[in-house]
Length: 341
Ligand code: BMA
Image: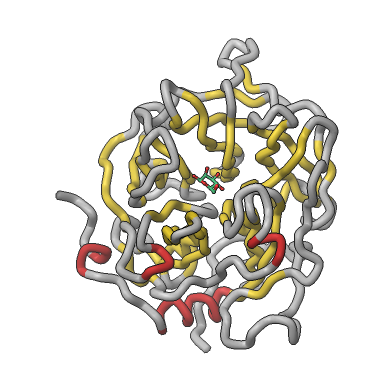
């Protein structure tokens, strides 16, 4: 086993369960035995919660959740948990405001990610901006949420910020798309000095010749800083004769120049197998949106949406997953170039 370490803070109270005999020894991720951790009808007016992001906050955990309301329209709900596993949700969706404090709600909002940079928490999601595009807001107290300028033109999805500035700029991954169920998609990166103007766009990685990610890919959890580079959990999609299948993949990006992919794993790390991943509103979806990690022990807990109906939890250790990604590395020269054309 390598000596790869997480660079970051300790989270000794993070959810954790050792690999049990239920999970294959040779797979790099193992599922929480009590999955799914969030079931149907979790709060009044919300039929399903999935594709959601959580993080440590004060002595407990906080999260932004994709709540599919009973009218089918998704919005973002705030949730609290003492242990990161058992969640309670606020009944009212998050009230986003403009900079003057006036309510400024998106028409719909889905697939939120949550990233802390210094003392500010940023939420990124997909919303309507003359078609699916990225919305972003900030908060310092999880009571007021101020929307910022929309970072990108339509159409775009799967935005996720890096948890610190790189070379003096904020850096965000995103996945340009179409206005529907996008049959293509690569991960790009953009930089901003101020969270308002975004540029220096670079290609990070595209679909690959491996069948599980041969249609499109998209960023997942906020990249985790490690001694090998940025560890990125993302989703990869295969088109089958009965629809799309979403699996979880892993890659390692260069620490100072993250449009350079050092390694990407040719094998998926997790694919739909359990009933809650294979059966639901949209079958065969595992969609990572967050990871909590403990730098001291190297433990990582990945939160993923399952079948657009539930939230699942999977675990790994940084050295184990980085070794696996390196062992099955299939990065091509297009991946390892700086992404500028
Ligand atoms: C994608 C997104 C995700 C969803 C997935 C599978 O296009 O809309 O929110 O989980 O499709 O339905």
